[in-house]
Length: 423
Image: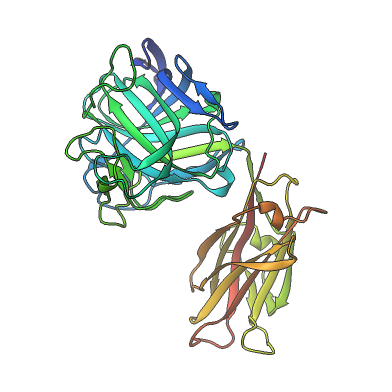
């Protein structure tokens, strides 16, 4: 592949970049800002240089025409994605002139209180020139203040740096945040993204630059969650104040009003496969333990058994394994399964070793084609890890919930694994 040299101005200086395809690497010099770090202390960021990667994407004005879901991303082995809303180009859209807006961000449990390694946003560019990108992270939403008054309190970070894109278009900017050690204790925050004209001295209060706009992604948040609402600071014009009357959306699915946004924290995510599968109720009629390890349409099959009363599930399988170490930050369980009859319910229970009992995490209608369910442990994940031997345990069951197509039904388990995050 031929390598081109471009100039991308990030900060007050021009940075020479090596470019491969439509990925541009450089640094952003923070012109102002401060961050409350994981120890609760304020850190001054002025003059700090941070690595930035700009990846070309594609978005359309207004609501997108949904064609199909984009490709899935993946985190590196030493970082864990704790929020991700990017469902591919077919889901990207923007509102022309949206130089100031705000969205709510809810990290997964594994991201609470942990320092961020990187964050990413989507940016639309009508005309390429230097712009100040300002980020303001708020801690809480306060209702009842009315129009013209900010509905958000508790600034976690407020910072801004210059960026000049290589040309017009749409970009996903990934910013390395390791150097300022930001974290969100409860995992919930509100992120305002502003595009402003540079000023001197730079204080982040220059006129809004409507040649830039935030890019949103419909299709639903993939990791973490966010309400289907954002605050559009344009009533009647941008002023940097996000009040409760400016909340808006785009009519719901598949045009959810959520920023393209990603957060990754430190840690290692391990897929833990079952080391044993015990038939608590039912009869195994096909497959073996290793068939539970991969999503490959190779099934561990359990036919219904006999029960003493109708409340007991005729199919129940207990799965066990061992966590990679005792310092578990987050734990979830993934089930991919199907059944051979309608009218059945599937449940997933995780064993709490502190209370010495199973806890129901999911109950839903079982499907005749493979469906995937991931349940995430809230609260303390260590309650679901045996402190003596690091064992983890899950029970997957199937029972009637309506008229049956066949009395002698079978549960087909394709994959049953734990996803465990450790330091």
